Image (cartoon, rainbow, N blue to C red; front, side):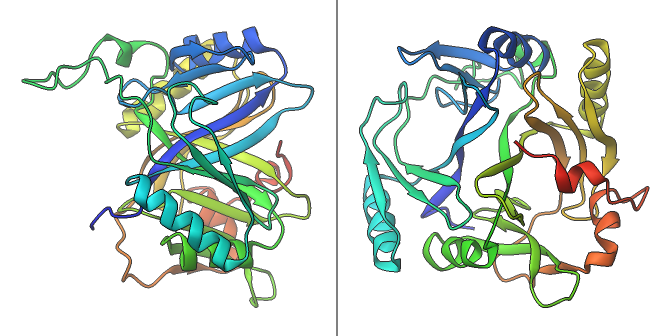
Length: 309
């Protein structure tokens, strides 16, 4: 499909309780590449195969959770157009100047009815992935350090009024609905999976009474074997695992959910089918949500519904 508007997830900024403990975890266990620190005390990371300067930013705070999640758009004209469309839809936007995040251009920020801050930006410094662009090798040494995901893949966010959230993403930002879980009465959606690309999802939301909650940020692995290797590394480092290794019914992806030292859930994820915008969304009834979450066990794990930051 043509990539003309929102391109992909760009970055997440997450709060941690102990900065240096979190740096050690994300650098040495998850295997992200540290790319910088700023005067606000934030630490910047990227995955080994990402080419832009950063995709995952942490800062120390009194409570864990997510500050904002961002998407990269095609160019500055697209950024201007989408901001105008958001305003025409009735959403207030804020322009954040270039450089407020390291090596990142001007950002447009707006708040969803779910309480989450979403950002759009067009420019971020490309620093490469350590592989030459002429006669490149398939990987390099950073791929073997820690879990070493390929990229920041998506986020699942919990909050209220996801019906309105879905309208914003589909009617304004050009996303399409890939899958959904119905509410117990079947009259609404309890959870939605949305894509702006050829991926099975780029962001997802679940209905929840409290605003602005993070369920997880997800990191893409290259294969099922790499997910299993991630599980080995988690056990070696006594990482608290939530669910997995297992396979989702929703998205068909393979997964392990675990928690960082501050209690922020993260996911090592691979697979999923390749949807197109003209596909009919797949629907799961709430009584079969357990199979959608954990296909082999058909189990709706309580923590999946109740533990957020």
